[in-house]
Image 1 (cartoon, helix red, strand yellow):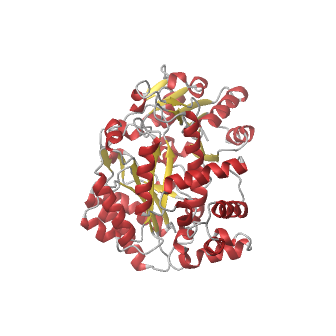
Image 2: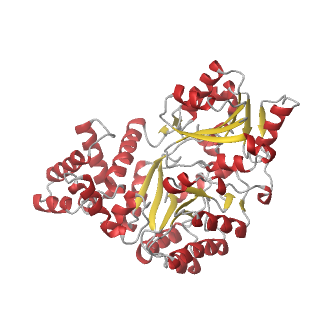
Image 3: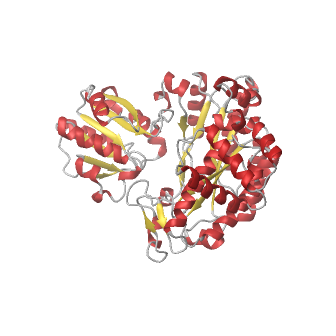
Length: 505
């Protein structure tokens, strides 16, 4: 084995689509290439030992915001114990501002941007000569028809235990300045017949959980409808062995034809990621985000009322020009729409994104270390931003988890943001922690807070008793069964537990 492709995934259940694209496009070097993935948190020495056990001449690393620090340690150790091994980097984290990054300084070569064509070419030059003179190689973007699709490189173990990432298109036509996709000129579709053929092969091998990484799945409605029909056909053919599909959709583009298709999906089979980010028109304009808020609101309301899709809707705190009052209004508005989950994100300064142009004017201070989260702006000071960070964590534990579905309305009342911020501040004051809070303890704390706010003891007890959180004292198997009773009737075995709890509520 000559070439080893590797990365550190955020979780075992995440299978790297990027590495499999590289493997699929190695051409005459494919037989000499292997793939070995790790998970962040692994010991550096163990990772290096396992890499060197393959006796590679070249190791290519996929570098991302979540693994750059650990990858830096791996590359540094590799260079100490096996300096003869050639290290090639790629991925979004090292494709921009590379000169200042330690991991780039340690490596031999870097491929920026698209690596499908450029990485194999670079490997041939390293192995066969002439030796490349330049360290940094700008990735060539070929027509998508020239790129071999990677899906056959999902193993049977991947299919059985991991989320399968797929893409019907690359790129994005929108220019939201906080997103790396803003650097794309447009969105490029893969040949739809070929792509659906790959989905068919995966399904025949037993794949049932598909996560689309397309930034704008519903941009081309004809293509969207054909893909959704693929899944509807599978659901009709085998309702007792259902598929599950996850899409990221543009919130203000939901024509009737797409609604008709969406409405046909049964519970537990469809999930949408919907980016709102901000409801403030001035903030949207400042970060070059085009969004019809009225249409987006109507579409979310329709999805909640007339579809079985599980909705994750995103908001970002810390955008330039947005103060906490503006964010709170947007949050409260979204709560009234009642999506299943509100993904409360803190702005991050991804390398290469145009958001940096606002740094001076809006006094935006970012953490210099990954994930480069916003620390303060001219509208939100550091202490308040820390409160928002804790709010986001507690919101995930209490609201998004589905464990407190019946108790959450008691918490939020008629002022969702203000009331949950009060709970967040109280929880932190009484625990000094945002992680490793046992479910029983969290449920007891929530009940205590509600009592201190004057809520009726019987009402609190009844709401918690009907929640998943109220079953924390039961055995884990009974708890899981109770939480999943309703979902089990309609959802695949691999359905995420949080969605199962939402369905069972």
